[in-house]
Image 1 (cartoon, rainbow, N blue to C red):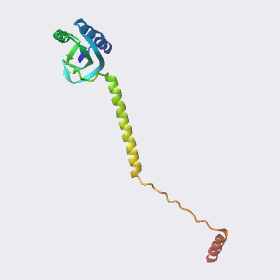
Image 2: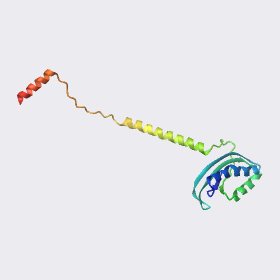
Image 3: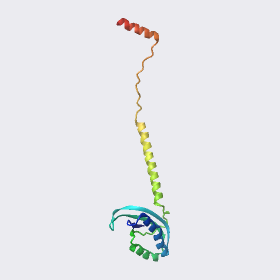
Image 4: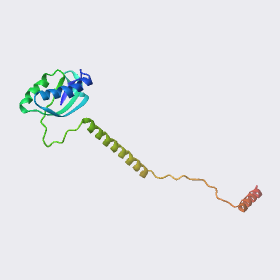
Length: 157
């Protein structure tokens, strides 16, 4: 992993990551097997007075005797803020692009959110009792009974 200074534009940083670094690796007899430009990222703390930089992740096969000169090249390169070189476990899975991992994560988050919304809606539906409206109805009455009621009410009045 290499962190490139934020003094460069994103285009220049990407060019450095995808052209300059691979050329340096090839010049010492190695080859890049994977490369991913992550773009601008903020730091948790300042690094050499910088608040953010451009991240580059790559895997390379470099001869062991050429590793020290490569480290020195990265150390003195004015565009590089920090770097981290590690040895890859031979049993490790193939590296994947950050953008692919991010898309998968966002899809899982969306699915999880949709599931939670669906479950809460079902739960609310189960918990909410059905309210029955009371409807005032007038009982049906025959014409004869209506006449009798009218006649009875007029006699009382």
